[in-house]
Image 1 (cartoon, rainbow, N blue to C red):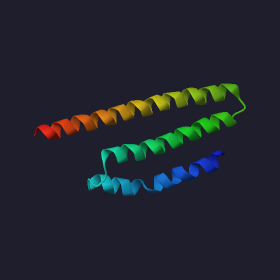
Image 2: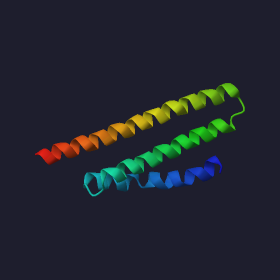
Image 3: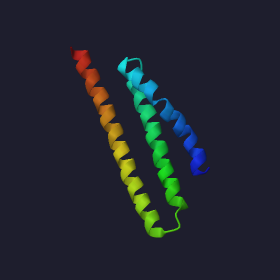
Length: 97
């Protein structure tokens, strides 16, 4: 699958962002679905970066892009852990009050 064909699902997800934001504001979407939606967007963007690196014929550029993508994957995973921690803490806080 090429870069253009793999970006179609991403474009659909990006079109949904304004709807997701409205759902967040109205509290009509679960934390799980919020995290899932944004994680899918981030994952798609990261996949495109890897595909770009694979198309490069210059080893130094390829290595730099792959190194950068590893950093972005790390940031994404840390962000997911932080989001899940916030959900757990907020649920405990709400239950105790």
